[in-house]
Length: 277
Ligand code: 2HA
Ligand code: ZN
Image (tube, rainbow, N blue to C red; front, side, top):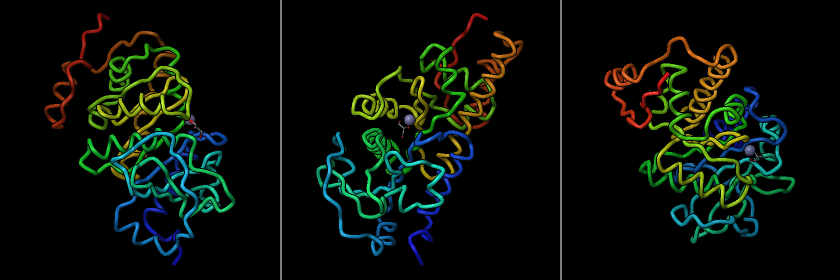
């Protein structure tokens, strides 16, 4: 048995490859992180090497103190993860203050965790608390159609949520709390991490204008599925807008209310505004 036979390690690698196959990870674009369950830490402990040096995360995540994460490496390519997971990903541990990390496995040829580690960990902290400890996956991808929409739609949560919901009937059921949007910001630092984790208090999806998307979920299937659903909806919207600036018919606010009732979801009324079209 090797560490690659462990279920969560396998699921992590498969998700990286699925994202690559979707075309969301040009070059070193995108990053993935997974918060290990205590029993999973026990299962992989025997594969850990001597701990590396403690290094600063660049932000503080006290609610994650002592937790373990599998994360993609900075500058690593998603298309290479399946070929050499031990070179392209790593498992890290956080210290008791939630301010430093050290590498316990992976990045065999050197390197450090994803440049978006502050965003990943701040999102994990918010979601751990908001989801009663059930959310474990944070995923960032450069989704083509969502990025395209950030050039033509107002960068407002209400507009993005409503337009994406209208493009596929499953959408309000898959992301009933909606999507948040941050305007263009410098990636990789604490400021964008604060802005994103603020949105994650309300939503499972945050769009970074002219850059990509962050999503959060309980497991690999749900989190990949969420990214896939939002991006597919964006693709339909891009096609629709390309054919005509006006829709001849669409899903109406009352249709959404009827759907919410039958599918047992709560759809905030602020997304069901009258458009005057
Ligand atoms: O890993 O996607 O946002 C490169 C990025 C940074
Ligand atoms: Zn990115």
